[in-house]
Length: 341
Ligand SMILES: Cc1cc2nc3c(=O)[nH]c(=O)nc-3n(C[C@H](O)[C@H](O)[C@H](O)COP(=O)(O)OP(=O)(O)OC[C@H]3O[C@@H](n4cnc5c(N)ncnc54)[C@H](O)[C@@H]3O)c2cc1C
Image (cartoon, rainbow, N blue to C red; front, side):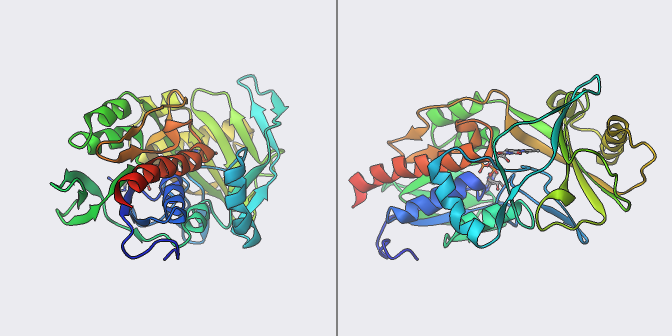
């Protein structure tokens, strides 16, 4: 427990233990509030995820982190010192539809070690997170505090304030009965899906790039996971991300069919059609990235003390998620500060 948060400090609930939820939780504790994080899945980090298949590991969601804001840079220092975040310096190219490759010159990239899920575990710090609990509704009590209900009807609370960090369409559903203003704002945001395919090769492909942005109807990004720090080198593991329009058109297709098609397209583009894939599995991200990354303002309902954070409120990247959680924690804490302390 944060020594600054007394046993009588108001408790704020954060829905979602992705990067936005975890950064909000840490900031709320720093500001002297008690925090409870509720997460529907069995792990931390949300879309900053790693899928383990036997001894293979794939970052099937976020690939890497870029850092521009000093608050994120500061938060990463202890994680880098502990070795759970490290720079990744891949040979990245842009693969055009005409097969031309131009080197990529993006800023420095960081990854979790041994997988991107470590970013969530590292940022969680001392926060209390209840896993495997999907919040399905919010109920306002007569004293102005909140009770949250899970998928089994169990209630949690009372909470002096709420921060919702789910992808926008899910946040809209959750907020429908709690704040029509916020539900409307979330409902206006479109999030695009993404099929991700994880494929392993017993023999190295020996390509002249480690990752590529792909200008193609089927694929948008491919990365050799084995070139990231702390990964298994053999078999060689690749993550392939499909293009947004293709993902949307094929969203309800059979996952095995999708995996096969994406893997074949990758080998065609890479000029490695004789390679023999082993494990090949597709994952469907229904809400991968915001369709129009831009800053959404006024995502706090001061009357009910309910706020919304998440990557889509500021862009479509991990850094946006981190900063959005931090900012909403500060906004909400200032309200609770006035009213309850
Ligand atoms: C395929 C893909 C590739 C990407 N590549 C990159 C990249 O290379 N670099 C980059 O910076 N970003 C990348 N991103 C974007 C990045 O992953 C996101 O910006 C970031 O992870 C979003 O964090 P978040 O906390 O806002 O949301 P999320 O990570 O979605 O976290 C929300 C959390 O809320 C939980 N939740 C949802 N509903 C409920 C509920 N009702 N009750 C309880 N919990 C709930 C979810 O389980 C989840 O854990 C990528 C995303 C995808 C999908």
